[in-house]
Length: 481
Image (tube, rainbow, N blue to C red; front, side):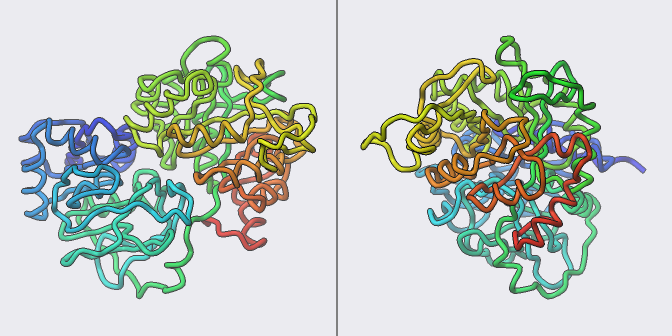
């Protein structure tokens, strides 16, 4: 049997490495192409996207792909649109005023309401309608700031809920448009892609009305600190000991139920070298969940190379402190959901309270926290809470917050720091540094974090991700099981 031929359009803003890896795991022969003949004649065409509406449309017009795509969709030929790929099917978007979309779907894509965290990062419940089709209910990974609120006539729609119901996916004939990322949605997402390739259907039961209100699950993120292609672990990035192969550990954590993986090259910045792209490629080949990568990122070009290698998000620390415009560049080129601020903060000595600083910025009896860079080798004197706010204004879509004082100590997260940062910014916050038990992860989530990161407790097999999720679910937290 000949493997399915899958043409992936290089929109210039997409994490094509993740899409390519997913279809390879399914036995297809995916390839990147911007050839008009491929768009017209290929058996399967994918329009991926992780960027802005305007940038994606500019690229499609420059390549002359607008009319061939519209004709293909009108004929209901096998076409898959992902994330921004779904959004550009609409007439317009709040993200790029004045830019016309493909107009396949009526209406305008709107920003999520300010009452919820934006971007929407993580796993949300997808509720499929009753009947036969490609779409089935399950948990899917989302990374979006904008959404389509109304179901267009003539399309079968699955819904999710974040600040109100919105369209999670649409299908009509062999055309499938997903606001979520099926290529990053684990086994459930891979099965959806398989059905799209084969043209097979599932029969969905009547949707559970309670599932529409479930909203985002809390996330558990194992962290792979990598040096010279091996996972290492130490205390405050010192005394590093070998903890295994990153690709093997990544696959094991996904099997346990990890929601995302974080890969940090802990020696990249101080040694003045780039994150090992080959390590990222090896991990991506084994992984069907999101991968965030940091270490040595100094520019939008650095971020682009990591996305091409297989990252879905890119973390920046030292370079952003030196020049916040690097966050702006990444957000504008690849979308805010790709720009992660890696914020390392250390408590500073108590000092008299300043009337200019908020209660959260005072922290620790007035000393507060300062930003540290170069893997903790340099204290900047910059207030961590103020820097978190500034970074979000510059373009950061998520904050990976590490307590320098707690990292590797296994004393638990700095809950005061985590709470202060989570209250100060409208974007998701990941708590990191010091976790030693499921109770520590529970405390981090209860104090305001949207996700929690841990390393030692997983690397040394003291706890599994699944076991931790059992504890958190028993405490009443929404988890992806």
